[in-house]
Length: 129
Image (cartoon, rainbow, N blue to C red; front, top):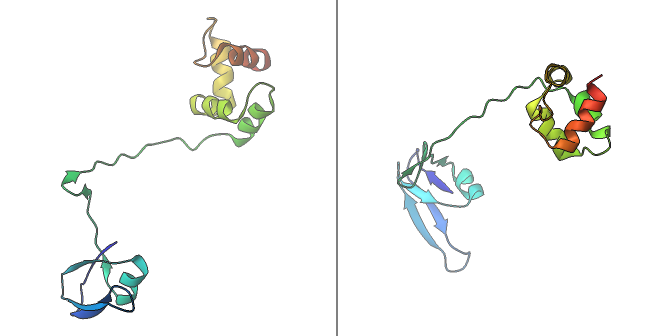
């Protein structure tokens, strides 16, 4: 990990116990040390501020709705033929039970839901009443 000395100059030991050498790290100088050593010397962690080497790294935040219904997830898992992964996929599309029921009842197409046909038939049997 890279650390930067923001304080006064300090001498640090580099290398193994036998055969080590001492180096003076001046204010503003960067040194690469293990995390525990850098913290124990009182250095600050060097940040790259969105850059990795010479390449600029772009970060993206994914916005999700946290209004998912956990009881709906458990209910889906209890249906024979629907596992955790399929239930996760259904929850991503329809986070609340009422949205799924509304979509099933409002559509007249055979392939109204964007999921597998066999799962769609199961859901229509249970929630399409």
